[in-house]
Image (cartoon, rainbow, N blue to C red):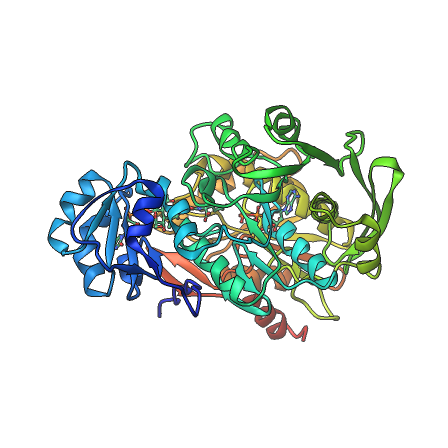
Length: 512
Ligand SMILES: CC(=O)N[C@H]1[C@@H](OP(=O)(O)OP(=O)(O)OC[C@H]2O[C@@H](n3ccc(=O)[nH]c3=O)[C@H](O)[C@@H]2O)O[C@H](CO)[C@@H](O)[C@@H]1O[C@H](C)C(=O)N[C@@H](C)C(=O)N[C@H](CCC(=O)O)C(=O)O
Ligand SMILES: Nc1ncnc2c1ncn2[C@@H]1O[C@H](COP(=O)(O)OP(=O)(O)OP(=O)(O)O)[C@@H](O)[C@H]1O
């Protein structure tokens, strides 16, 4: 069985706009008959064309979208926007063709025009960084709800429109899908939208046509070096968020040294926040209490204004994320006192698969986490250790066909921070799972104080093995799968839930 590809949310009552208006607005070149052509949507996937769509033919890594122009026309596309090569490729489709130098670069502005998303936009808040984007986004959404607003969210895990939830495909959707989502949010009277913005999104124009009221940077650490040649290139991709055409003001965490580099390179006004002892920001987070059910902290800002609240997840890094979320809202114009009042009993947010406790009251604590970088492991292991009286057991595997250079360090950090380490598989994709495991073992062997090491495959056996070693008072951290509902094995998305596997393993071991 193959897992279903999640749908793209579009407006339910799209308004038609004349193609001639688009051409005049942007001064575009075209061939074919545009008389009377009306557009109601935009897509760059021929398989998802809806009648009335402007089909955008983009040159990709594998194909040129314009090759599918005839297919798009058969599905109801009324015109194509593409480059010169695409115009030749799609000439036989019968569609009028609008020609631009870079369809990807035009996609955001064109989609904003078609969906009218630049007219009276909601409050827009965006988060970038290596780790913590999803967590900060959910926390901002949670606080906004506690302040009484109707909210929208676009994250790696889910897209939310008020109470409507759909599973996400990419972390940040392509620009056409982003603007369609915003148009649908407007129909539901969403007042504030939080968007998780990946480096890839900034590099490939996915947030074009949007102007964020507040943009935020969480941290930067080793990841995605398959997409970016060096950490400097990866950093440059993130820094591009701090430009006046992307955001009005920024909030920067100083918890990694890259934060100071963002402050220095930013072309918009920024404020800073730190949760790291010894590093002082304009805003500072001080941990007051760490329990299995929550982390309590004080946030102090300029003129010693402060608030105390709780975030319902373990770890200093989650308090850092929550502090960042609050400061984003202060920068967006909310009074700190009003926020403090709304969250005085704690921030109400459910973070799917982010150090999520899936065990019950009896037996070992089992956390399922989405961490897949050395820095994420370091922080989650420290958080689990703080609330574990007994042994810390870690289960993890690494992504196939994704940045292989981080695998040794993942193995080393995992072995250093746990008492028992069970190396297993994650998404092998087209790689040999055995050789991924072997690299992780090499990394684990580099630890100065190595954990007891086991290699168990597949992951459903690994979690059962980990549970068999665990007793009351121990914790198991299963890092990698988080909220995901599939495993990618040779390109096939097989339905798979780590959270369910972990619960089943506990039940089978008698820990109901
Ligand atoms: C490297 C990358 O970003 N690739 C994206 C890119 O794919 P591509 O260049 O290979 O496209 P292609 O297959 O050559 O097709 C070219 C065009 O023809 C279209 N086409 C193609 C075939 C067809 O039958 N019909 C059709 O219309 C495609 O929709 C596309 O518009 O354009 C596709 C269409 O939008 C994206 O789905 C695809 O994202 C892939 C799936 C991906 O994995 N991206 C990752 C790297 C990514 O973006 N990740 C980030 C960060 C995650 C994190 O933080 O961990 C994210 O934001 O998700
Ligand atoms: N502020 C932080 N600093 C370091 N690690 C963090 C932080 N926040 C979360 N993490 C770790 O990173 C993992 C991923 O968190 P989250 O999903 O919020 O980040 P993300 O940036 O959205 O990740 P991705 O880019 O993979 O979608 C968490 O499960 C946790 O292990």
